Image (cartoon, rainbow, N blue to C red; front, side):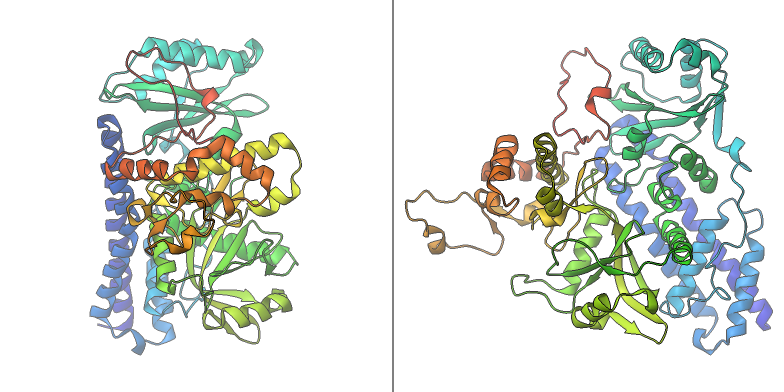
Length: 583
């Protein structure tokens, strides 16, 4: 068999592995409707974890297949170029060609330990120019706007059908009709030219979303119907969302990935970006669970930004971390995090422990309170764009993770995370009492919701939290996190001796919540505010109750939109209180 034939066979088998991987991904995703209908919330969380692991499993199988066929490092450069050409030829008309290219890149990266980052053998740029709209009819359902609002809703729910009954369909239709009439004038309703809804329903945790838009001559309006189920597994409409800010929060970077079944992810993300023009394209791919391709799209976006910008990489604002060195490009919306070579004595952890913590967050329900992170190896930056001060600090603190050439700074391992304002800086600068109260309340909710997701944040200094442009507080420092069961929450003994704590027998896993007030926030008036709003955070009994909830396997429901948007329900036996609403 000659070189062309071998390359052609390997290209075909790589695509086979991708197709198998995508079918596996889709099978889990399609099961989201049944899990939603039956209230199988623990199974939902298990499937989220399983779906994340699919890529690595499929990649390992593909790489092992190649090693079985050829001696990888005996092949010359031409062989890998021919292999790419064969693979590219197989992608013509493939509905997930962009995801397949990323899978191919991962295979080449794994074969060469990410040393061969070259467009001649990898798809640094896409092989095809995708024009949004080409497959629009395959991902969109259109509804007649010339009928009445009520009939439009009735038609819509004949298309989006579920295998369990509605709690009260007539009530829900009334709520939906009234909400739309309150948000659009008669003139606007009369001007609607189309109602376009994405065919896949978007499932996440205990909620489902039917997502689309209302089209008018001069603009479009997001049109999102949020659904939940009650204790008897009957469906009810929880809210109608028509504000881009609400939709943006639903697709936030601190939330778990959606289950939305489609054969045309490129078309779905293109439609979503029309709804959310401020979201980056890579963020939308990640929101659909295609986080590996999201990393590819990010890298392409990052390279394009480097071409049109001139600022230099520098240390990120905020207090220096004891475990991570964090830097940024001021004109770009992410931070880069590198594990330091050595940790302070107070950090009794290892490099592998840090990696394991970041992986734990990836596999957990981030409940809108923990920033998603993306791992990269051998990431290259132009050396002339790295400030001298940053370069010196990296060489001093992260020498084992970096390599310098004449033109590049190569980072062997790092994480990328969405940029936020560090909370400690925000609290130092903000003087508005209402904003401070809102932020401290957000901080308390953030800690509580993470605990309800079975994660103990560990180091809760305010510098380890960030605040978004929407005013949400997000946790982003993971080197001391653990599952709730791994800590022993104790009350301080009552004593007149201020040094009594020194005589206690304290085990490594012991935690004294009464001491939290001394380091979560520094200033006295902020401590008082935290005690007023979330005083139970400072009690061992509260944390032990969180442990019991986690031990029982209870899955919480975190509504990502403002609770004021929720429709009223008069259902006997159902609590109308929404504790820890995610907004």
